[in-house]
Structure formats: C-alpha cells, structure tokens
Image: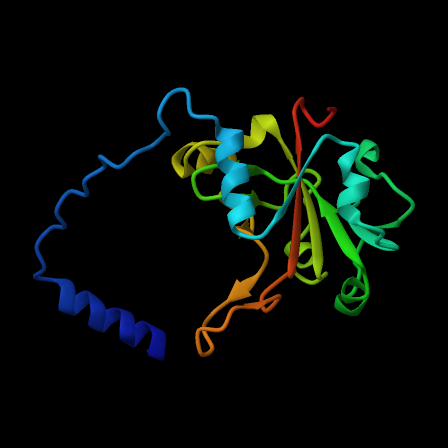
Length: 201
C-alpha cells in the first residue's frame, strides 16, 4: 500500500461514523442592485487598486505608453494592435523572452465590478498564463458585455477546466513588515482599456 493510499484509508476510517454534513445556506447575494452602473463600479475599484483605466480602442496605444516590444496572444484581434510597438505573437516564447518584453496586451474572459477583478481563462485573445504573469506591464482589454456586477454572474462565463488568472490590480503584497511591494507575483503595472461595443468602440 502506498503512503497516499494509507492516508486516504485512515481518513475513510476516521470519517466512517461522521454524521451527514448540514445543508449549506445559499442566501448570499448573486447580483448587484438593479440600476447599478457596473462600469462605474468596476472603474472605481480598479482605480482604488492603482490600475490605470482607459476608454475606447484608440486608447490601447496610449496604454502601451511607448513600449517598444509587446507580447500578444496569436489570436489577438488586429484592430487592437495599435501604436508603433513591435507585436510579438506568443507561439512558445521562453520565460526569458517574455521577461524581455516591455508589455503584454490581451483580452479577458470576464470582469467583476463589485470586486474590481478581471478574469482570464486562456480563451480567445488571452493566451497562456505565463504570457500575463511574466512581463512587468499588462494591458488588458475589457468589453462592456464582459463586465458583470457580481462574482456569481461572472463565474458561469469561465471555462471551469481551463487554468484561470484573476487579477485585482497590479501585483502587490504587504506580507513583509506590512510594507506594500508591487510586482512580486506578476506585473507591477496594470492598464485596463474598456470598450463599449464588442471590441470595436
């Protein structure tokens, strides 16, 4: 018997006489109040998290802020590749190559207004996780129809079998002596471009 099997068997024996689990209350909120401006709520949270917010497809070039080399998913829409930057499609870029990029430009799967969270699930225009975690500057495009008020509304839009990245502002931690340090677990700069109509503002 392997160590794993032995541990599982001990757990089964320990739980053999356990009573059934009580029902879990499900009365928590699943949406925001009707009439809530989800875009304004999302922007408020993003700004509070020290992210930069832009509007309209033309703002992508400004969000890239002079970056010379920008990594992008291979399926990123051509209409989003704006500005003088060289756009390098991720077709297996190494970690060192990603680290040498000035920025990364992607789309997203969904955004949650109440928490200011942007969600990626490796779907269309998002690329793999390393693409968005290694470069120091992430520019992410969020369409208006991808913004949901509450987490319960956004979750069904994600692929549950795919690796997911949830972003709430630039990477930061205060674990060490309660001093905020940015860029520890991902990009230290986050720019969010909000589009009004299906990605073509």
